Length: 327
Image (cartoon, rainbow, N blue to C red; front, side, top):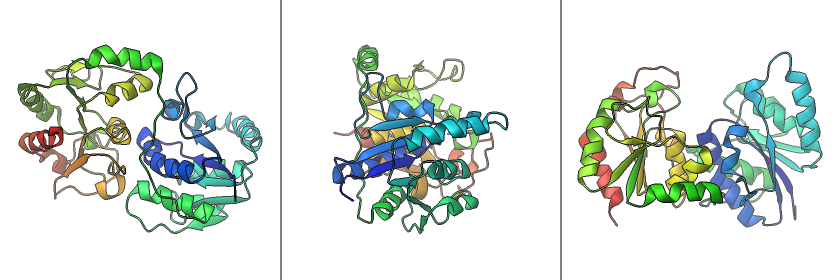
Protein backbone atom coordinates (compact mmCIF):
# COMPACT_ATOMS: atom_id res chain seq x y z
CA UNK A 1 0.00 0.00 0.00
CA UNK A 2 1.81 3.11 -1.26
CA UNK A 3 0.13 5.98 0.60
CA UNK A 4 -2.23 4.34 3.08
CA UNK A 5 -4.91 6.16 5.01
CA UNK A 6 -4.55 4.94 8.59
CA UNK A 7 -6.65 5.56 11.69
CA UNK A 8 -4.99 5.16 15.10
CA UNK A 9 -7.34 4.66 18.05
CA UNK A 10 -5.88 5.51 21.46
CA UNK A 11 -8.33 7.39 23.63
CA UNK A 12 -7.26 6.43 27.16
CA UNK A 13 -5.08 8.18 29.72
CA UNK A 14 -2.20 10.48 28.78
CA UNK A 15 0.32 7.71 29.40
CA UNK A 16 -1.55 5.45 26.97
CA UNK A 17 -1.36 8.11 24.26
CA UNK A 18 2.33 8.77 24.89
CA UNK A 19 3.16 5.07 24.74
CA UNK A 20 1.71 4.94 21.23
CA UNK A 21 3.79 7.84 19.92
CA UNK A 22 7.08 6.01 19.14
CA UNK A 23 5.30 3.48 16.94
CA UNK A 24 3.40 6.22 15.11
CA UNK A 25 6.67 8.15 14.72
CA UNK A 26 8.13 5.01 13.17
CA UNK A 27 5.08 4.73 10.93
CA UNK A 28 5.51 8.33 9.78
CA UNK A 29 9.20 7.76 9.04
CA UNK A 30 8.44 4.63 7.02
CA UNK A 31 5.44 6.18 5.21
CA UNK A 32 6.03 9.95 5.00
CA UNK A 33 3.10 10.41 2.60
CA UNK A 34 0.58 8.35 4.53
CA UNK A 35 -2.55 10.06 5.83
CA UNK A 36 -2.59 9.34 9.57
CA UNK A 37 -5.62 10.12 11.68
CA UNK A 38 -5.94 9.66 15.43
CA UNK A 39 -9.06 9.19 17.54
CA UNK A 40 -8.20 10.73 20.92
CA UNK A 41 -9.72 12.09 24.10
CA UNK A 42 -9.86 15.92 23.83
CA UNK A 43 -7.83 16.25 27.05
CA UNK A 44 -4.74 14.78 25.40
CA UNK A 45 -4.97 16.30 21.93
CA UNK A 46 -2.18 18.87 22.69
CA UNK A 47 0.22 15.90 22.63
CA UNK A 48 -0.60 15.65 18.92
CA UNK A 49 -1.45 19.22 17.89
CA UNK A 50 -0.56 22.66 19.26
CA UNK A 51 -2.94 25.61 19.43
CA UNK A 52 -1.25 26.99 16.29
CA UNK A 53 -1.84 23.76 14.37
CA UNK A 54 1.61 22.19 14.66
CA UNK A 55 1.09 18.44 14.07
CA UNK A 56 4.46 16.71 13.62
CA UNK A 57 3.16 13.15 13.29
CA UNK A 58 -0.43 13.14 12.07
CA UNK A 59 -2.77 14.68 9.53
CA UNK A 60 -6.15 14.49 11.25
CA UNK A 61 -7.48 14.48 14.82
CA UNK A 62 -10.85 12.97 15.72
CA UNK A 63 -11.92 14.11 19.19
CA UNK A 64 -13.71 11.36 21.07
CA UNK A 65 -15.00 12.21 24.54
CA UNK A 66 -16.12 8.68 25.34
CA UNK A 67 -16.07 9.47 29.08
CA UNK A 68 -19.26 11.45 28.52
CA UNK A 69 -21.10 8.73 26.63
CA UNK A 70 -24.40 8.00 28.38
CA UNK A 71 -27.43 5.88 27.50
CA UNK A 72 -29.22 9.04 26.33
CA UNK A 73 -26.50 10.59 24.15
CA UNK A 74 -24.62 7.45 23.11
CA UNK A 75 -26.36 6.88 19.77
CA UNK A 76 -26.28 10.49 18.46
CA UNK A 77 -22.59 10.76 19.36
CA UNK A 78 -21.79 7.51 17.59
CA UNK A 79 -23.65 8.63 14.46
CA UNK A 80 -21.74 11.92 14.39
CA UNK A 81 -18.42 10.17 15.00
CA UNK A 82 -19.14 7.59 12.29
CA UNK A 83 -19.79 10.36 9.78
CA UNK A 84 -16.63 12.19 10.79
CA UNK A 85 -14.46 9.08 10.51
CA UNK A 86 -15.89 7.75 7.26
CA UNK A 87 -15.34 11.08 5.53
CA UNK A 88 -11.61 10.26 5.64
CA UNK A 89 -11.98 6.91 3.80
CA UNK A 90 -9.48 5.03 5.95
CA UNK A 91 -7.84 1.90 4.56
CA UNK A 92 -6.76 0.66 8.00
CA UNK A 93 -7.99 1.12 11.55
CA UNK A 94 -5.59 0.14 14.34
CA UNK A 95 -6.93 -0.14 17.88
CA UNK A 96 -4.03 0.47 20.27
CA UNK A 97 -6.35 0.73 23.30
CA UNK A 98 -8.00 -2.65 23.37
CA UNK A 99 -11.25 -1.93 25.17
CA UNK A 100 -14.82 -2.16 23.96
CA UNK A 101 -15.20 1.57 23.33
CA UNK A 102 -12.03 1.80 21.25
CA UNK A 103 -13.04 -1.33 19.33
CA UNK A 104 -16.41 0.24 18.52
CA UNK A 105 -14.60 3.31 17.20
CA UNK A 106 -12.39 1.12 15.01
CA UNK A 107 -15.47 -0.47 13.45
CA UNK A 108 -17.21 2.89 12.95
CA UNK A 109 -14.38 4.07 10.69
CA UNK A 110 -15.50 1.69 7.95
CA UNK A 111 -11.96 0.59 7.13
CA UNK A 112 -11.74 -2.77 5.35
CA UNK A 113 -8.94 -3.89 7.69
CA UNK A 114 -9.19 -3.50 11.48
CA UNK A 115 -6.28 -4.61 13.64
CA UNK A 116 -6.12 -5.04 17.39
CA UNK A 117 -4.67 -7.35 19.99
CA UNK A 118 -5.89 -10.95 20.00
CA UNK A 119 -5.91 -10.62 23.81
CA UNK A 120 -7.18 -7.07 24.41
CA UNK A 121 -7.77 -5.41 27.79
CA UNK A 122 -11.47 -6.19 27.45
CA UNK A 123 -11.96 -9.58 25.79
CA UNK A 124 -15.10 -8.75 23.72
CA UNK A 125 -13.13 -6.06 21.86
CA UNK A 126 -11.36 -8.72 19.77
CA UNK A 127 -14.61 -9.59 17.99
CA UNK A 128 -14.64 -6.15 16.34
CA UNK A 129 -11.31 -6.78 14.58
CA UNK A 130 -10.93 -8.29 11.14
CA UNK A 131 -7.27 -9.07 11.87
CA UNK A 132 -6.59 -9.77 15.56
CA UNK A 133 -2.85 -9.93 16.22
CA UNK A 134 -0.96 -11.98 18.80
CA UNK A 135 1.45 -9.75 20.70
CA UNK A 136 4.86 -11.05 21.76
CA UNK A 137 6.61 -7.98 23.20
CA UNK A 138 6.31 -7.16 26.93
CA UNK A 139 6.27 -3.35 26.81
CA UNK A 140 3.27 -1.44 25.45
CA UNK A 141 5.52 0.77 23.31
CA UNK A 142 6.79 -2.27 21.44
CA UNK A 143 3.29 -3.76 21.36
CA UNK A 144 2.00 -0.68 19.53
CA UNK A 145 4.71 -1.20 16.92
CA UNK A 146 3.69 -4.86 16.61
CA UNK A 147 0.08 -3.91 15.91
CA UNK A 148 0.99 -1.25 13.34
CA UNK A 149 3.45 -3.65 11.68
CA UNK A 150 0.76 -6.32 11.46
CA UNK A 151 -1.75 -3.89 9.99
CA UNK A 152 0.68 -2.73 7.29
CA UNK A 153 2.27 -6.16 6.82
CA UNK A 154 5.69 -4.53 7.09
CA UNK A 155 8.11 -3.97 9.96
CA UNK A 156 7.68 -0.67 11.83
CA UNK A 157 10.39 0.28 14.32
CA UNK A 158 9.55 2.66 17.19
CA UNK A 159 11.56 5.88 17.19
CA UNK A 160 11.70 8.84 19.55
CA UNK A 161 8.66 11.00 18.72
CA UNK A 162 8.48 14.72 18.03
CA UNK A 163 5.83 16.55 20.04
CA UNK A 164 4.19 19.78 18.86
CA UNK A 165 5.51 23.17 19.90
CA UNK A 166 3.12 25.82 21.19
CA UNK A 167 4.73 29.32 21.06
CA UNK A 168 2.54 30.80 23.80
CA UNK A 169 3.35 27.93 26.18
CA UNK A 170 7.05 28.12 25.33
CA UNK A 171 6.99 31.81 26.28
CA UNK A 172 5.22 30.91 29.55
CA UNK A 173 7.85 28.29 30.42
CA UNK A 174 10.99 30.25 29.52
CA UNK A 175 11.13 32.58 32.59
CA UNK A 176 10.41 29.61 34.89
CA UNK A 177 13.52 27.81 33.66
CA UNK A 178 16.24 30.42 34.10
CA UNK A 179 18.10 28.16 36.55
CA UNK A 180 18.47 24.35 36.42
CA UNK A 181 15.44 22.69 37.95
CA UNK A 182 14.05 19.27 38.74
CA UNK A 183 10.34 18.68 38.22
CA UNK A 184 8.59 16.29 40.60
CA UNK A 185 5.21 14.78 39.71
CA UNK A 186 4.03 13.48 43.10
CA UNK A 187 0.48 12.46 42.17
CA UNK A 188 -0.84 9.66 39.96
CA UNK A 189 -4.07 8.17 38.69
CA UNK A 190 -4.65 6.44 42.02
CA UNK A 191 -3.01 6.51 45.42
CA UNK A 192 -1.36 3.09 45.24
CA UNK A 193 0.96 4.40 42.50
CA UNK A 194 2.17 7.40 44.54
CA UNK A 195 5.46 7.40 46.42
CA UNK A 196 4.56 8.84 49.88
CA UNK A 197 4.59 12.63 50.22
CA UNK A 198 6.69 12.45 53.36
CA UNK A 199 9.39 10.70 51.30
CA UNK A 200 9.28 13.56 48.78
CA UNK A 201 9.44 16.04 51.67
CA UNK A 202 12.75 14.50 52.72
CA UNK A 203 14.04 14.25 49.15
CA UNK A 204 13.43 17.87 48.10
CA UNK A 205 15.96 19.52 50.50
CA UNK A 206 18.59 16.99 49.46
CA UNK A 207 18.13 17.87 45.80
CA UNK A 208 18.18 21.57 46.64
CA UNK A 209 21.45 21.06 48.55
CA UNK A 210 22.99 19.89 45.26
CA UNK A 211 22.11 23.22 43.67
CA UNK A 212 18.84 22.39 41.93
CA UNK A 213 15.59 24.26 42.15
CA UNK A 214 12.67 21.86 42.66
CA UNK A 215 9.28 22.47 41.07
CA UNK A 216 6.12 20.43 41.58
CA UNK A 217 3.65 19.41 38.90
CA UNK A 218 0.76 19.82 41.31
CA UNK A 219 -1.58 22.33 42.88
CA UNK A 220 -0.38 24.14 46.02
CA UNK A 221 -3.18 22.61 48.13
CA UNK A 222 -2.33 19.01 47.18
CA UNK A 223 1.36 19.39 48.11
CA UNK A 224 1.28 22.04 50.86
CA UNK A 225 3.74 20.08 53.01
CA UNK A 226 6.45 19.88 50.37
CA UNK A 227 9.22 22.53 50.52
CA UNK A 228 9.08 23.34 46.81
CA UNK A 229 7.10 25.54 44.45
CA UNK A 230 3.96 24.07 42.88
CA UNK A 231 3.54 24.96 39.21
CA UNK A 232 -0.02 24.23 38.01
CA UNK A 233 -0.09 24.17 34.23
CA UNK A 234 -2.06 23.30 31.16
CA UNK A 235 -0.86 20.33 29.14
CA UNK A 236 0.85 22.56 26.49
CA UNK A 237 2.56 24.48 29.31
CA UNK A 238 3.66 21.23 30.93
CA UNK A 239 5.18 20.07 27.63
CA UNK A 240 7.11 23.34 27.36
CA UNK A 241 8.24 23.16 31.00
CA UNK A 242 9.43 19.56 30.81
CA UNK A 243 11.45 20.38 27.69
CA UNK A 244 13.59 22.55 29.98
CA UNK A 245 13.81 20.23 33.02
CA UNK A 246 17.14 18.78 34.12
CA UNK A 247 15.25 15.77 35.49
CA UNK A 248 11.67 14.61 36.08
CA UNK A 249 10.83 12.35 39.03
CA UNK A 250 7.50 10.65 39.71
CA UNK A 251 5.47 7.45 39.69
CA UNK A 252 3.67 5.69 36.86
CA UNK A 253 1.98 8.91 35.79
CA UNK A 254 1.49 11.03 32.68
CA UNK A 255 4.19 13.68 33.32
CA UNK A 256 6.84 10.99 33.80
CA UNK A 257 5.95 9.35 30.49
CA UNK A 258 5.80 12.79 28.91
CA UNK A 259 9.35 13.51 30.08
CA UNK A 260 10.59 10.27 28.51
CA UNK A 261 8.69 11.06 25.29
CA UNK A 262 10.47 14.42 25.21
CA UNK A 263 13.83 12.76 25.77
CA UNK A 264 14.44 14.32 29.18
CA UNK A 265 16.20 12.41 32.01
CA UNK A 266 13.46 10.55 33.84
CA UNK A 267 13.32 8.73 37.17
CA UNK A 268 10.22 6.53 37.49
CA UNK A 269 9.13 5.03 40.82
CA UNK A 270 6.91 1.99 40.19
CA UNK A 271 4.75 0.04 42.60
CA UNK A 272 1.57 -1.88 41.67
CA UNK A 273 2.03 -1.50 37.90
CA UNK A 274 4.68 -3.52 36.08
CA UNK A 275 7.47 -1.43 34.53
CA UNK A 276 8.27 -4.28 32.15
CA UNK A 277 4.92 -3.53 30.53
CA UNK A 278 4.20 0.11 31.38
CA UNK A 279 7.65 1.58 31.98
CA UNK A 280 8.83 4.66 30.05
CA UNK A 281 10.90 2.64 27.57
CA UNK A 282 11.07 5.34 24.92
CA UNK A 283 13.75 4.61 22.30
CA UNK A 284 16.14 7.51 22.99
CA UNK A 285 15.14 8.44 26.52
CA UNK A 286 17.56 8.39 29.45
CA UNK A 287 15.49 6.74 32.16
CA UNK A 288 15.89 4.87 35.43
CA UNK A 289 13.06 2.85 36.95
CA UNK A 290 12.99 1.81 40.61
CA UNK A 291 10.66 -0.89 41.92
CA UNK A 292 10.94 -2.76 45.22
CA UNK A 293 10.99 -6.57 44.92
CA UNK A 294 7.95 -6.87 47.19
CA UNK A 295 5.68 -4.91 44.84
CA UNK A 296 3.11 -7.04 43.05
CA UNK A 297 1.24 -6.11 39.91
CA UNK A 298 -2.24 -4.98 40.90
CA UNK A 299 -4.46 -2.62 38.91
CA UNK A 300 -7.10 -2.16 41.60
CA UNK A 301 -7.47 1.58 42.07
CA UNK A 302 -6.86 1.75 45.80
CA UNK A 303 -5.94 4.94 47.65
CA UNK A 304 -3.34 3.53 50.04
CA UNK A 305 0.24 3.61 48.71
CA UNK A 306 1.58 0.27 47.55
CA UNK A 307 3.57 -1.34 50.39
CA UNK A 308 6.51 -2.08 48.12
CA UNK A 309 6.55 1.45 46.76
CA UNK A 310 6.84 2.77 50.32
CA UNK A 311 10.00 0.71 50.75
CA UNK A 312 11.90 2.56 48.02
CA UNK A 313 14.11 4.75 50.19
CA UNK A 314 14.88 8.43 49.87
CA UNK A 315 18.56 7.54 49.64
CA UNK A 316 17.92 5.19 46.69
CA UNK A 317 15.95 7.87 44.85
CA UNK A 318 18.58 10.54 45.53
CA UNK A 319 21.38 8.28 44.29
CA UNK A 320 19.47 7.42 41.09
CA UNK A 321 18.60 11.10 40.54
CA UNK A 322 22.20 12.26 40.90
CA UNK A 323 23.36 9.60 38.45
CA UNK A 324 20.83 10.82 35.88
CA UNK A 325 21.95 14.41 36.45
CA UNK A 326 25.57 13.58 35.61
CA UNK A 327 26.72 15.03 32.27
